[in-house]
Image 1 (cartoon, one colour):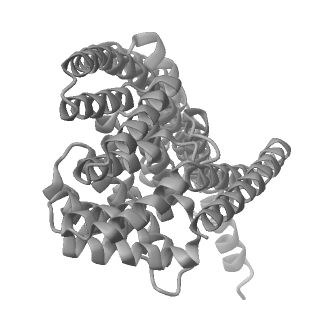
Image 2 (cartoon, rainbow, N blue to C red):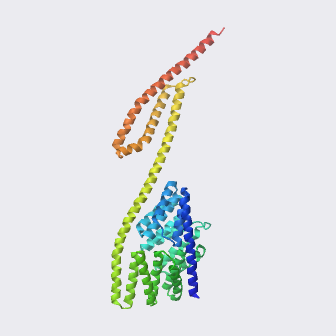
Image 3 (cartoon, rainbow, N blue to C red):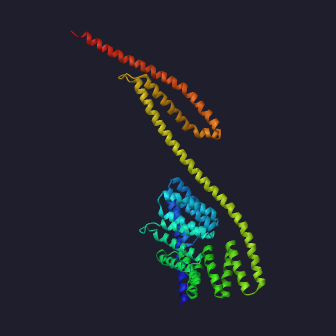
Length: 469
């Protein structure tokens, strides 16, 4: 009966995976057809989320970079936080570069806080805690789990349970890693319970494995075996190497503690084959270590020595692979830097354009006032007012040319402050004589206008006096 249930569960999971592959294909077709940036962002995010939770395909760096480009284009802090979250996830769970992962997770925190996006804040903190688990820094991992819990979205939010289950899983990992099985079991069972609503294979596998590990630490081997068998059946259906390795990392030591050497050997060989096929040296080294331990238990020194050599050789390869990952990470970081730099330049250009528009508006108003005062034939005007407005107009015109020519001057002077100063002095030297000529013209017109007004007033006075009896 148990075998029938396991086979039926695997059948359902395969059908579910097929449906998710179809859903991914549909989303990719929509992505190719749409031209609106916000729609492209939402489709990309959905593709990444399905890839991550369903384990149908790996998260790819190109999609993460595209997310950031769109977020920068839209100038949306919440979208930028989402982008940095996915970039960090790529580094952490696909590339294996935890330092770069944490760097990008921390980049996303202030953006998510500025946008008041609790769902994203909690997600970033939970992913940061997973990063610290990988580095075996359990205290910092716990600190960020609590920060994530404090920023859970409201219970009315449709994302509440999805974020809650991450809190429960991470707490179970913390208590299991620090050998507190009672607390680990509490949160592992809560993970299973919450996943009944979410129905995610990723969290189901984590919950089953953690329950098995917690029961194993408590000494309840019968319950541990039940959970490990269920997680073993589910792990066989996943395409993600990391999840299978995480399961076997807990299951094989349990089998060894139960003296089930042949089964432990079978699973260790599975793990070794998995590492070879995926070219994952971490998994190969883990599997070789288990094989060495198994043959030590069987008192077969020659085989134990053979796998110890593989373990050491894999460590050397892993070191080389880490260097390759670092080089790839540097290239990826450079692409990120270019995207961020382009966004800054675009924002500066937009700000400069607005400043030029404001200066033109101010210049237009000043010129209109000067012309009105100089050419109007109704009011007597003080020449000092024309002088004051002329000086203001000169300053506004100078600022206009400064804004307009600043990018060009920077390119030809290469940001040299002395050359920039000389260029601005030359511009001022051209503007000042022109300003004097215009001011002289305005004063001449103003004097003529004032004389005409006074002459007209005098004529009216004389006419009134002559008409008196």
